Amino acid sequence: MASKRALIIGITGQDGFFLTQLLLDKGYCVDGLIQPHAHDDTQNIKIFLKDYEKVRFQLHYGDLLDGGSLTRLINKLKPDEIYNLGAQSHVAKGFDVPEYTINANGLGALRCLEAIRALGLEGKTKFYQASTSEMFGNVPSPQSENSPFSPQSPYAASKLMAHNLVQIYRDAYGIFAVSGILFNHESCFRGDDFVTQKIVRGIASIKRGDIKHIELGNLDAIRDWGHAKDYVRGMWQMLQRDQPQDYILATGKGHTVRSFCEKSFGFAGIDIVWRGSGFDEVGENKKTGEAMVMINPDFFRPLDVNNLIGDASKAREELGWVCEFSFEDIISEMVEAALLPQKDYNK
Ligand code: NAP
Ligand code: GDD
Image (cartoon, rainbow, N blue to C red; front, side, top):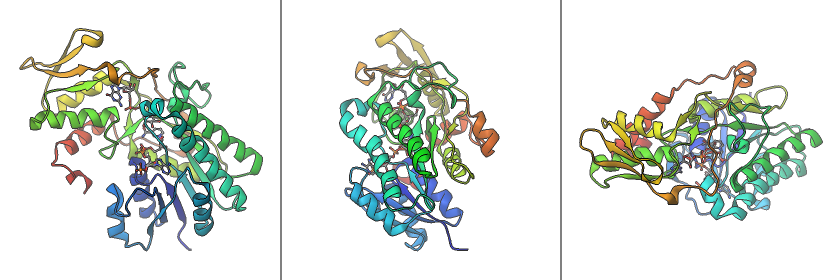
């Protein structure tokens, strides 16, 4: 039987890396869309170019802002599966570039769905959309597939737009299109300016003597942190079903940013104690009294989401999805990778 072909939009991101690895291991031919500013030996995914010598792995230029590039590429490849992981994915930056965020994340998904429809690929190409727990905003946890949406940022609004369009194109045109509503997931490939990677790389810089302390914003926010490797497996499982349906992926356990900090410092051999409150709160090295974590008001968002904890019962029951990594596994992996000399963790 011929290999299945998958197109990954957003292949240079964290999830793109793990999904590529998973699909290549399953025997797929994987095509990745990269933006014009990227190089074809770009970042994490260069390892696949070396190992697969462009036989089962190829990169193509395109952009979610450019409908023609998407349509031409989808027409050329006629993929069995498209994973739309491409996005301006940083919630705080979305407040600074809201128009771009809506365009890339909301209209970008529409352009993909329209391409499938215009090319008559409704019966051939399955579509995965990267939806997010941010769409729930501050509705009470645990959030499930039945919880209402209440976006609190341009990013969340852009993702809800895409989420709604997936449902509309599925119902109106019979496209096998699904949204995975994923809660936060991390790894050593997490982007630098998300809080987990910022914390562990900050700890590594403190240990190397490059900086004295880390500056953070809202320490009280609760997130349900899983491992990206578990979550990309869930994405794939959603596309293997007979009927398209949306699923939540989450661990069901919430932790504050403060607790992530404390545990990460702990793994690096530094015990933290917290003193003060509000903007004056400080995380001190218990042994030396030195300030390790300080609050910088610039890192607070105009609106934040305080308590995201997901209920993934449906995915567990219907997909057989399981989380193999614990919170502690994620922290130890990330701290260890951050403590390695730069770039070595890419291997
Ligand atoms: P990420 O590391 O930020 O990766 C985003 C990817 O999108 C990158 O490859 C980026 O390319 C690409 N991209 C950005 N703008 C684009 C455009 N205009 N056209 C084409 N590609 C574009 O994100 P991630 O953590 O892997 O997450 C994957 C997806 O899941 C995202 O859509 C995110 O919003 C969503 N999500 C993530 C989480 C999470 O906790 N990680 C949870 C829920 C949902 P460059 O490398 O060139 O910038
Ligand atoms: N980035 C960042 N930087 N966040 C901080 C900081 C800081 O210095 N200090 C505190 N935080 C708080 C944020 O205010 C937020 O409440 C929490 O830490 C998590 O922030 P991020 O790591 O930036 O992730 P996010 O939850 O906003 O968004 C991520 O998860 C979403 C799923 O819920 C992204 O991956 C999104 O793309 C994804 O949809």
